Image 1 (tube, one colour):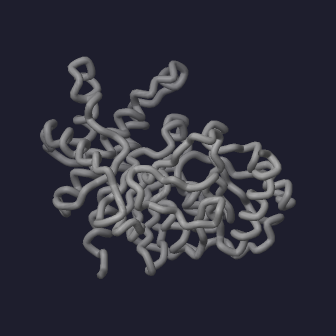
Image 2 (cartoon, rainbow, N blue to C red; image 1 turned 135 degrees about the vertical axis):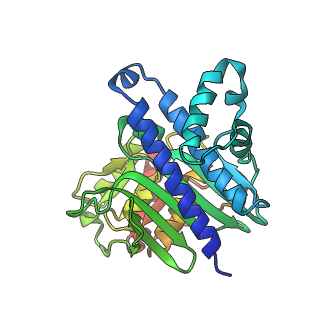
Length: 331
């Protein structure tokens, strides 16, 4: 069964959400908001992007449930009327004349619980909130899951260079992956799709590793020990969001390590569904530290063991062995 209709709707919805996020950052993020650690701009972008994507999905596929990060409880509070109006204004910039009540209903359509059977969408409206506020990397990540497996992924990365390892530094790309059909990338404002493939590097010493920018999001000390064990020469590439999956997919990095900082931390499916398919369809491999595929059939959470590793495939087993050895030594 082809997913051409789903693909077209998802691509247009993510493009619109990215446009909303860029507009919010341009108009609302300033040196003053950063100095005050004011998170209201990313809050507006989060709610606005979710409303835009969910409304687009509901219009095209009204029976499809959606798992998304946000809900409208905060916006429905009388004390946050001003915030609700700011979100509504931004949403109308992409979905003209959408009534406020329909905007709130679209946001709340993301309350689905997920599961092992049937089909549903998974959305992270702004993945990488700190990166968004800094003007660095963030992503709008959307995936379609059927019977526990990711079938389609669309991920917009408004600040990612088209070729961060080469000479093309234009920022803003969209990745699209469909199971058994490969991964493509297009630039902001362009329709031409370019197939992307993972790096061919088979020596970990020469590979570029990437990890989370924030130390609280991934155990950078463990990653450093892994890289030392593998004699990695280059410093790690650190960035926020699922953009890390994107740079592995198009070969700017060969390895992405997501290693937990707390034993009780549980990943959410919206943080990995889109990115994992984008890497695997580009020829790479994504597993937990035990070498098992990621399991998106257990609801809104991703019960992976000891962390997540994404690679170009050629390096996967060697990286897995190094992570296990370092983890055992640490414990």
